[in-house]
Amino acid sequence: MSEKSTNRTIPADVLRVLLAKSGGYCQNPTCNDDLYPLITQGSLATIREAAHIIAFSKDGPRGAEELKTEEVNSFENLILLCPTCHTKIDKASHLFSVELLVKWKKDHEEKILACFNAPIFDSIEDLSREVLFLLAQNKACFDTYGPCSKNRDSLFSDAPHMWSHYALRTIIPNNRQILNILRKNHSYFGCKEVDIIEKFAAHKEGFEYNHLSGNKNTSVPLFPLEIHSIFQEKN
Image 1 (cartoon, rainbow, N blue to C red):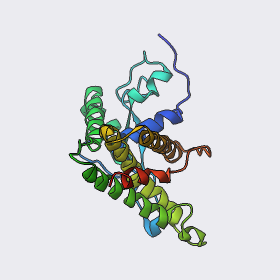
Image 2 (image 1 turned 180 degrees about the horizontal axis):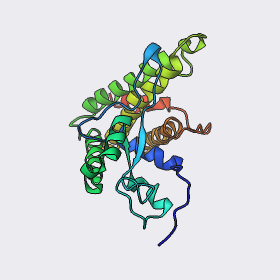
Image 3 (image 1 turned 90 degrees about the horizontal axis):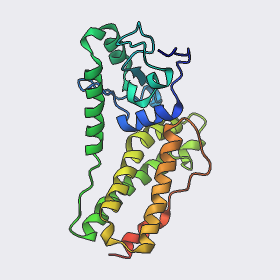
């Protein structure tokens, strides 16, 4: 039997994966509350809580003394909840078994993935319309609230909060869908176009890292403007 350390800190990369796979919503299927809601004056709140499926302490909710600290704080043993649901599953732990919480998490992740199932398009024109629409949504968010927007210059602007909101709610999901569509329909593109798509993939991964990890990596590639050319040349 191994002793647990007293370190309850959940690794940042584990939190990042939890957030990404939850889509930013409570993983209780009867709740699904927004974990990053907009509040007064456009400010963004963070109400997510990483709840242990098997408690950190053997005497806690669904506790088991044989687990090591790294196992208790692992992605597999955590579920992302709102504060109300976190309190509920711990205060009434006899009603919320390990098996039930694991099922909540698995079903929620499958629902999030289902949102990004990319279709095979019958024509490049149909594909272009779908991707360009998603890119236009992203551009509108960036132009209105992004780091280069005019709104950022105002001393009293809520643009940084709104930018965080739309990065999580619009741009990250759209980027995932765009990449899934382009890769699923790769037969429409040649080597040069595939290179551009993979530049977009690198930007997507870096953008997610900067907005989900809590860190900022200045080496993240900028959005590849040439991605629009892969559709212009086809139409």
